[in-house]
Amino acid sequence: MKKFAKLFLVAGSLAIASAGAFAEGDVVKERQGLMKTIGGSMGVTVKMIRGATPFDAAAAEEALKKMSEAAGKFPELFKEGTDMSKVPTSEASPKIWENMEDFKKKAEELKVAALKGSEAAKGGLDSLKGSFKAIAATCSGCHQAYRVKKQ
Amino acid sequence: MKRFLVAIVVLGVMGLAVFYGLTIPGVVTKAELPKHTASIQNGETMFYAGGCASCHAAPASDKCDDHKYSEPTKLVGGRCLKTPFGTFYVPNISPDKEDGIGGWTNAEFVTAMVKGVSPSGSHYYPAFPFTSYQRMKYTDLIDMKAYLDSLPAVKGKAPAHDLALPFKLRRGLGLWKVLFLDGKQFKADPGASDEINRGAYLTEGPGHCGECHSPRNALGGVDTARRFGGGAAPEGGGFIPNITSHKTGIGGWSKDELVEAFTTGFTPSFDSLGGSMTSVWKNLSKLSVEDRKAIAAYLKSLPPVESKKK
Image (cartoon, rainbow over all chains, first blue to last red; front, side, top):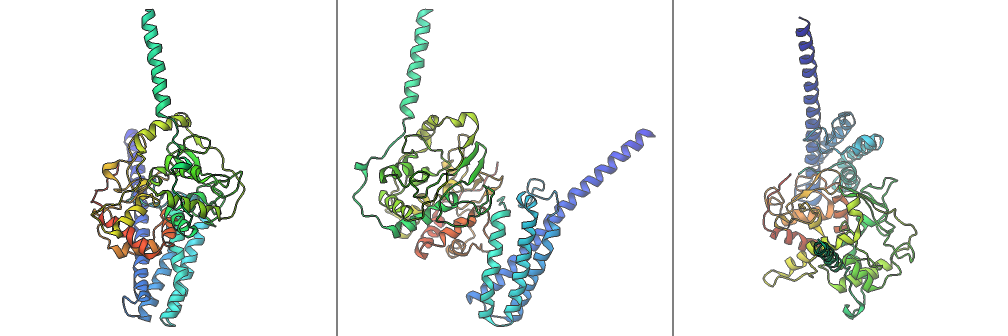
């Protein structure tokens, strides 16, 4: 019986540990989904700015709002143990966790810049263009420091 | 028995002589340089095509491996590259006479760029991509030196490299060069367009794209059969993407999309290029649009190679 209890304990802890691993994979998936959302919003905005699609204030506002919301979720999704060395699908550099304050600041910058952009979109295409540079700079600034390509 | 010993000694001496001969650092003499009035403007183009600042500008923070730098024209060095061979520290190439390269002649500069050899005659490590710079025209190198000389002189010396023992012996790099430094300048392909040839020159020479975007063999040389097919990142544990026209590479990208990436850093799916590629696209964005188109055209013309991750 004692043996059985031990076995039960071991099996139980293994199950919890693997559930944990699943949860880490899920967090990475969620982050990557949000990154795709941001990319999608970027696409909507850039195409309007270039004149590839007609300017649509409501669509631009909506896209940038989504971008801002996605950025707002980042700090809590970059949990301990979810960097690229621990989760195979992750491209998050361990440097994020070495510089968490800076990382959170960068996420906040994107959140704010995108929100400003969504407001600016109401004022017309030129106003949208004026807000764009600050948004784009946050993308490359953060990827430069913290994203490591795996493919 | 005595005869045997003599034979061993003779063989040993012959071996040393061969090693000595093969590892003699190369040099480009003043007499080999063309008569040329330097153009600082073209030198600036070569500087940005060559991405000198990416390594030689000081890191933006106190972290020596910070990908970001604050000023591209203050080339004080000090950046560290943490590789499997050890840690390399990038030297000062500002025109400071003591700490930088302000005291170098054109011939010494060209020797460094194409032979990978310092003015004092020692081999540089191939973390400095002279394997690509050797393709460059001497006139472009003289222009580059003139541009570098026009930048601010900055004081400061980088720490010595911190490498594992066998790699500490610089003389041995001469053997590496026998294998991987062929000494050939770029030759235009008469069958290709002027645009593709310009792109090939920029990509293969100053741009040194193949240094990171190719797999390397056990000896640290580029695997020529799979050039541009992507490779393990020299630091940080990632993978540097395939830039051939294979579907695992940039096969799905149009030429315009490549130019876009070289201008704004955005990929066709509006991802933003990151890591060490951020400073690369920022440098490329300073080239003429014709030069960016030329690089794109050349990359599109590369034979497809499938990405292979080991």
